[in-house]
Image 1 (cartoon, rainbow, N blue to C red):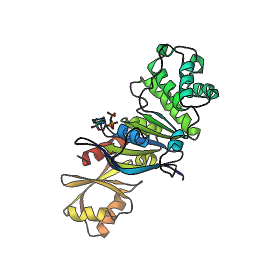
Image 2 (tube, rainbow, N blue to C red):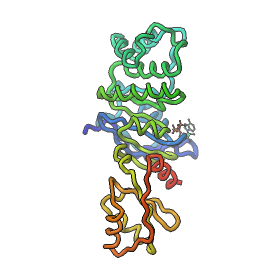
Image 3 (cartoon, rainbow, N blue to C red):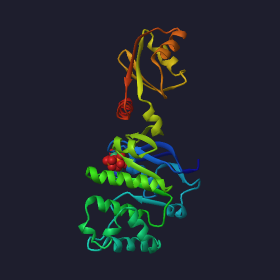
Image 4 (cartoon, rainbow, N blue to C red):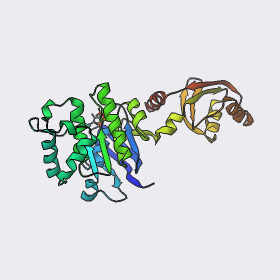
Length: 298
Ligand code: ATP
């Protein structure tokens, strides 16, 4: 699949704070890619770097297989901060100004206003808009000129449940049209519902990235214990479905890729000379997975 964005070991420090630490990842065409992490984990810094708003101090990134340039920038729409809309101008007038500044055709206004469901409010002043409508107008502005990639920083922040649902629907609709989406969010639920892929960040470090479907299909993890924990740890890594391991007192909490049967697991270790004295299946959610990953990083 076509690589839209490739990031290689980018780092950015603010004084002693490592806002982004050696981050590498790839985004492919058609993905809805979520940067997921708690506040201060480096999401906005990462987005600012890939948009060329700030410089990383090391590492590199490429857009559409090439070094970033003005040309590549034109193929990307973004909502990083609330844009400066004029409160006393209408939605249409505001978009017209942005289209002029960005050198985009005003003929696109109708399309983007309809897409974000604001066409019927196009002649209302911006100041009369709800917060959710303002957010949708910002997305409309970023879609002027039909970008191939849309970058959104915390798109549902501050919205009520209805506003959140509207933005979610909108993002999914835009993705359906073939636009690759990269969004930052601290909300697991949001990422779970919208994204196809995710990179989990904490304190500037990438803890994990992959297909959200795969992460979700890891519905089970196992607690495993035995008399020889070191040996168990080594053998675990040989299991073809092994994914991750968190050490807890006298047991490991182990995640496997896909479904796995407890007796099968027991047999696997028995054949290798390990007798488990503890084997418990845990139902898990993405939230648990996320918290375990964060815990592991502390
Ligand atoms: P949030 O969801 O709260 O916006 P984030 O994951 O987007 O968080 P960043 O905004 O990228 O995180 O911040 C990462 C770290 O870098 C934080 O510790 C933050 O305090 C620090 N930081 C970000 N910008 C600056 C700056 N201009 N000057 C100093 N420190 C900064």
